[in-house]
Image 1 (cartoon, rainbow, N blue to C red):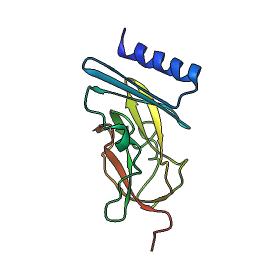
Image 2 (cartoon, rainbow, N blue to C red; image 1 turned 135 degrees about the vertical axis):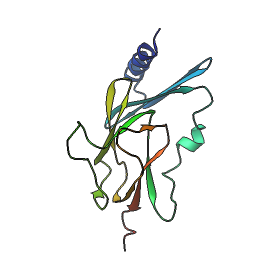
Image 3 (cartoon, helix red, strand yellow; image 1 turned 45 degrees about the vertical axis):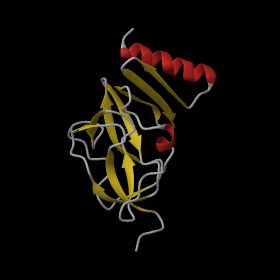
Length: 148
């Protein structure tokens, strides 16, 4: 069974059992699928490379009082929905949890990534078209309520 077929099977299992997240491990491959308001996000990684469940439940890391938006999957980062389109966000833009901030292409599937936090974009950490890893910081934000 191909990796994509496994992902589709996991999504079917999630829908049938009303699950928000599922993870499987087979030999040297680990697949994790998470359902969010923006759709399904998946990561396919070598076994042992995903953080432990306790690490996944931590809020975005705060460094220098800045929050981070991290990649929910392995793929290619794009600042805009299509080539030549305006980027979703720029430094200084205010975000709410539902604001789309980028797309990540994984296995020919385009996944829109939402901020999931409120704040103002302080820094964009990834270049357009750059490969990203699961958990890699993409943006730094000044959290809402801490401006000034």
